[in-house]
Image (cartoon, rainbow, N blue to C red; front, side, top):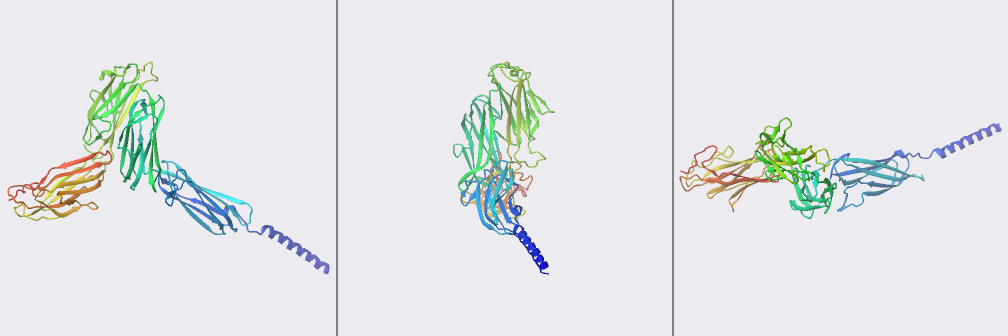
Length: 569
C-alpha cells in the first residue's frame, strides 16, 4: 500500500514539473511585430504649391509594453515646411514616445507645401524604431506615401526660338496665367540667361536685373514678360534660358514652379521672319485687315535656286474669303498659300546675302466664332516654310529649308450704349416735356456695356454733367455691381466696374447702370445737353492693350421714348 502511494506521488511530482516547464517557456506574454501599427496617411494627388497634411498613425495591438519609440518623418524633396515663422531647413523631423501600452494608439500631423512640376511624384516617409517588453532586440518599421502633382496654379509658357544664328537678335517670351480659383499674391519671376545672351530691351521693366515682381495675380489673369537681346555662341551649342516662379512665404521667397527652354546655335543657309502690320507683337481686333510680310534672306555663300514658299494661316478667326495672296496660289484643301519662281523672281536664284519679302493680306472675322458666342484668349497663327531641294555643295543635308511662326493675339471689342428716357420703366417721369423755362424735368440715363472677347481689367465708364444739369443721386445697377458715383468738384459721373468678364452681353446679360439727371432750362428754343464726354475704358487681360471708347453727347432731343421733343418752350 505504501509502495503504491509512493508511486503515485512520484508520478504527480513529474506531472507538476512538466507543467512548470511549459509555463516557464511558453506562458510568457506573446509578441508579434505585425501587431505594431505604423501608417502614413496623406493625399495621393495635389496641385503644385498646395499645403498638404500628413498623418503618422501608430498603435500597439500586442500584449507587451512598447518602449523607447523613436519616429523619423521625412518630407518630400523640395518641400517648403513652416515651423512658426521660420522655414525648416532640414526636410526631416523626429519625435519620441517613451512607452505605449497594449491597446493604446496615437497620431501626429506634419504639414508641407509641395513644390515641383506637373507630373512629379512626391514621396514622404516615416520610420519607427522601438523595443518590446523585456526583449533585448529592437525592432524597426516604416511606411511611405506618394503624391502626384496633377496641376499647376500658375501656367508658365516660356518660348525661345529653336535655332539661332550666332549674333542674331531674339526674344524670350514668358506667358503666365493664374489658373487657380484663388488670387495669388507676392510672387516673382527670376530668369537665368544663357552664356552669350546680351539683354537689349525688357517689357515690362524688371524690378531687378532679372527679377519681375507681381504683388497680386488675380484668378483668371495673366501677363507676358518679353526680353529682347542678342545670342552668341559656337555652332551646335545649346543655350538654355530658365525661369523660376517664387512665392513669398513669411518674408522669404521660395521656389514654386520652374520652366526652361533651349535654342540651338546654328548657321542656317536661309533666314525667315514674319511680320504683321509692321510688327511681330501686334494686337489685332475683330475685322482687322492683317498685312503680312514674310521676309527671307540667303545666309549662305552660294546661290539658292528653285525656292518655294508656303504659308498656312491657322485659326478660326481668319476670314479666308478676304484673302489676297498677291500672286500666290491658295490651295483650299491644305489651307496653304504657295509662291514659287514664277511669281517671285528671287526664288529662281537667290544670291548670297540677298534678302526680300513676300506680302499678302487677310482680314479677321467681324465676330467671334460659334455663332457669336463670346470667346476668351483667341489668337491666329501664321506658319511659313521656305525650302529648296537644290542643295549647294557647301551645305549639308538633303534640302535647304527655313521655318517661322507668328502668333497674333485677338483683343476684345467692347461696346458702350448711352441712352436716355423721359418716362423711364423703372423710375417713371417728373417735370414737363417739352422742357419749360424755369421748371425742372428729370431724365434717366442708361449705360449698357457688352464685352464679347477677353476679360477686361480696370474697366470704367464716365461722363460729365454740363452746366445746368443736376445730379439727382438716384441710381440703379445690376445685381452685385458697383454703383456710379458723382464728383461735384468736376461734375463727373464715374462707374468703376473693375473686372468686366468675357462674354458679357453675349453669354451673360449686359452690365447696366442708370442714373437720373435734372434739367432746369432758362432759355427757350434750345435742346439742353443731359451728359457729355461719355467714354468707356479698360485693359484687355489677354493682349494688355488699353481700350478707350467714346460716345456722342446726349441731348433732350434724343430720348428713346420721346424723340424730337426736347426743345425748351
